Structures are given as C-alpha cells and as structure tokens.
Image (cartoon, rainbow over all chains, first blue to last red):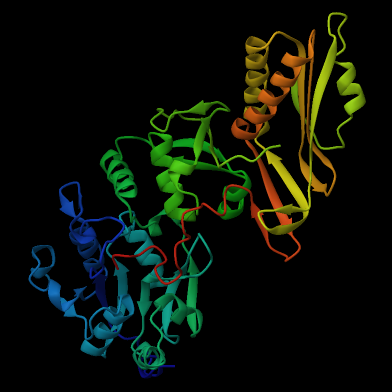
Length: 288
Length: 154
C-alpha cells in the first residue's frame, strides 16, 4: 500500500501522453498524423486533459523543439533510447506526488468513456490499474493509471534489466479491467491502419455503422479465438475491415497473404460492403 | 455435386461407380494419403478444415474447367475434413474418359488446382508436440513482439 492510500485519499491524477516513439512501421511521425485536421498527439492530449489536473507529453531529449510537441508541457526522458518505461519512470520522478494516467498517442478510437471507466475503477492501493487486452488477455500498460508507489518498483525492475512495461505489470500487483468498448484500445501502426482509422473517424456519426458477420478459419480462427462474430463497423471495404480486426487480434498473417470472400464468393479488397454481408478472410490454403 | 466433403472415410468403390459410362474406355484416380513426415518434421496426425460454402463452388469450377480442357466423360473429387491418422485418405479424384491420356491429364489438373485454390486448411501435429497450419506458419509475417505489443510510437 502506498502512503497516499494510507492517508485515505488517492494521489492526484496527472496525464502523460507518450510520443517519443520511432514510428518505424508507420514510416512517419505518428504523433503528427492528422485526423480531421488535428494531430494525433493533440487529440490524445485534449482527451486526457479533460480527466486530469495537469497533462504532459513524454518526449526524448531530441524532440523538445519538434513543433507537434514543443507547445505542450513536456517531460523529457531521463535516459536515451529506453522506450515507454523510461517515459513513465521520468514522469513519476518529475512529480512523485502524482499518479499518472499514461496513454500512448496512437489510440485514435479512445473515448472519454474508456478513460472514465479506468478512473472510476482505479485501485490506488496497487501499483497500477490497467485494461486487459482483448487480443491476448495481457495488461495494456499504455492506457493505464500508474500510482506513485510504482516508481520504486520500476526503478528496481529497470536496474535488473527490465524494459517492458507490460511485463512489469504482469509481475507486480495491479488491477486489471475488461474494457467495455473493445475498439477503444485498438492502436494503429501501419499506413493501412491509419487510413482505416481516418476513414472511420471522418465518417463518424454520418455513416451509421452496419452489422457484418465475420467467419474465421484455421490459423485466423485460432488467433481471433472464435469461429464467428457479428460486428458493428463502419468499415467500407474488406481492406478496412481487415485493418480494424488486425488491430484487435494482431494476426500473424499479413493481408497480402490472404484472400477475402464476401457472401461465400471471392471478392476484391476494395469491394463495397453492405449491411448483413458475411466476410471470410482466407488464409493460404493447403488441401490435398 | 461432383466436388464434395465428407467427415468419414472416403468410399472409393461407390465414388468410382459414379464415373461408369458406356463410352469410357477407362478411368484414372488419385488418392492423397496422410504421410508421416513434412519438411523435416515427424507428423503424427492431421486435421483438415474447410470453408465449405466457398470450397464447393471453387471445386465445381475446377471440375468444369477440366471438362472444358479435356474430352473426358465424368470427374469427381471428394475431400475429407476432420481429424485424420497416418495412411488415411484425405482426398480422392476420379476421371473417366474414352482414352487414357485425357483421364490422366484431367486427374492431374484437378488435384493440382484443388491444392492451390480451394479453401481447405491442414493442421499438422508433430511428434515433438508442436503443431502448425501448413503454408501459414513458416512464411508468416513475424508475430508482434511482446515488448512492442503494437505501440512502437509509444
């Protein structure tokens, strides 16, 4: 138990947007990606700001003058090249009195409701409160509340060579939640996923999401953990739908290894989906 | 249906009888069996899974193509699904025709196309306790590493 919890009132909550990554798969700075004319970083920052008393952007020392980040209050990584755990450590060190609502900047579907759920179900007597990934059941460290008491444990973990915040959460006392809105935690890493997220957000309330049925076979069935689901989605094409589902399930097969079938007939990736369609992504076949 | 699935042992005798034709001088068949090794691994048993609604359509298209390309009388393909043991028959193709040449050619065409195009998947179980979906594992894109769990910009 941390001292704040002993005193009866949990530590005040600050916000930290992680924007120090290399964006290798996206091949351009993810923080600067625009959605509806606003950078991904600004969207995330404004979202978090509505729920905390102070918000900061976590950056590497080489990024302090970068225009997407420079106009925000910054917390600079205390060591170079350490990944997100260094960002979290640096924030806990800069304001040891605060607990931190830590968010990756690449969660375009994150909603106020998802953050409210995290805050309302927060347990300040453990080191962190986090969502459980819908993909693999493991903690999601980059949409989580980290308590002041985590500072010492992270320091010890880092000293012993640990670098993975997810592994840290798995091996320390934390509270894990099931997200009510599974899509809220889908992150985007590739240009394809970005295009899908842009489309989905642009359509927003204009395009009413439609219901599709997706059937899974073989390796995809195992990785999705189901053989069928019905989904409310605003995906316009099988390509969009695959990007949406791949963000959730992290399939090991790339899209160019698959074919797609709509209503039990092979279709193009750009095929226009209609409400009620049944979609199957077809892994490499091996009959005979 | 001339392309079909079964979850039981394939009855080759009755399948062959479907090909009988007074104008046929003979028939050629191919049987695919479960063998005990693949790519250096010792296989203990297999599972076949199919997207049958599409597989039957694609299989029928292949048989129609065979009729179009070769002057044959009848063609039939039966594929098994479910769990199979070593030496079990996974697939059977039969073709009857007036002369043997086109029956051989059409049989070869059908099995080759079925293997490449029909949505059927094979999971191999190995002596080592491992298992894998054939054509899906070895060439697959690398799985996202746990340290990244997707957030490479974080």
